[in-house]
Length: 584
Image 1: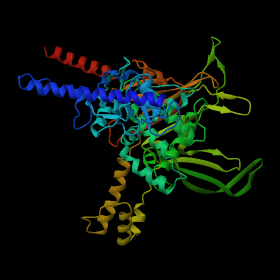
Image 2 (image 1 turned 180 degrees about the horizontal axis):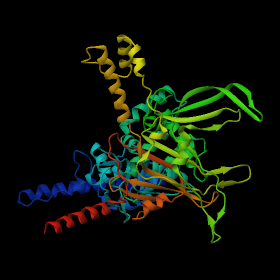
Image 3 (image 1 turned 180 degrees about the vertical axis):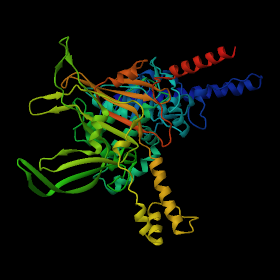
């Protein structure tokens, strides 16, 4: 009975359209002789691209939300899913008897969009709608960018007005905390504001073919849905035409939960560092990276550290005077170069001191004291009696620093409240980086012309114009001198993940620097803050993870004291007024 009724209703609508079109055509022909032209209703005329639909005004953009998992709300199937553009609900299919078809008859909602092809249809008549006024809907379903957009992101901030009435800064949008997902929200805000990662995932063409090839060749190490969903999530976060001023990370969290075997899932508390370490490694493998082959992940975050292990191979004891013993040790050093994606720094234990006011005292430690671990001289004693030293041999483009703030055992988890004094700009890592290995003058003098040529070839040194052996040696020395002079070792902080509250019930939040505005923003799920004192708040936070960006070589040192452009403009204007007054 229901199917007969639906068929009858469809036939009636079809006959009504045909009768209306025939009547309008007849009137138009009849009036042409009298000089008055009556045009056919636009939605009744079939154009070359489709139908002018009479239900366009029923679309409600305020209820559209394409952040949720693309599954039918009735059957829970994830293929051939359509979104109702009137109420925003997801349904499967558009043929007779499907959930979308029945929905159009039951509640008189006729406009639907295919969530895969982005084509818009009118149901139950089942014809495709071509209308330029709907391009904003198809864009929000799958945002796209051009190369010119990248330069805009790095300049002055642009605010946009969303349909929900909020004004949002492009790229700086809040994230829904679905259930205990602050660990993801803070990590996602930090990672998606790393320029190399952002620029790569804004364009699906950068990785779509690569990840498909890896999926076909080595499916056991590739996680294609995770890569595609993260790219989609990044584009939505930087969408300049959003219907709302926030993003729901539901789809990317579903992909993360499946890829990690529910280790990182909705409703479960997690550590941002553990998530970042797992996520970067999984993305590296899924993008075709190996131990030898690089990916965008290793190009951005991978550095090298020299691990020096000192072992006593021979020990001699000699008595030199009554009560005095001389000990001679023969030490053998083993050097191993290891790759890293982040550096972990130990925080000193926090004894509970009290001042004169009988209040608790929170200890502080300079970052440079913690980095002394990598100066190549400070050693730690292993359980085997060996001593181990560390020194950085290659700096990454983006340096991730992790502070070991939490300690846990079988009974409880404890948080170290020690504050770290760190610079926001010009973190100089030169004291912790090994100098490039260069041959001495004596070694160069012993080498033949052929050996000098091989040395130049291995270092890609151009020997054009070298006429003698002395010219080759001079060119090699100039090469190593320029390497030492132009070596980039200074970093600027661009993201900071901190923890507030106690170890059990606390929450994570992120601070991100807008490079164009020179302004810090604080993200705590949906809440976004910024003010003139935000830079000081970043410096006083209980930082847990930091991301520093390497300055290009030759960049002039900037004290970074100006918190925003307003301070800088005020200073320059005051100088100009003083000069004008002096001229008068």
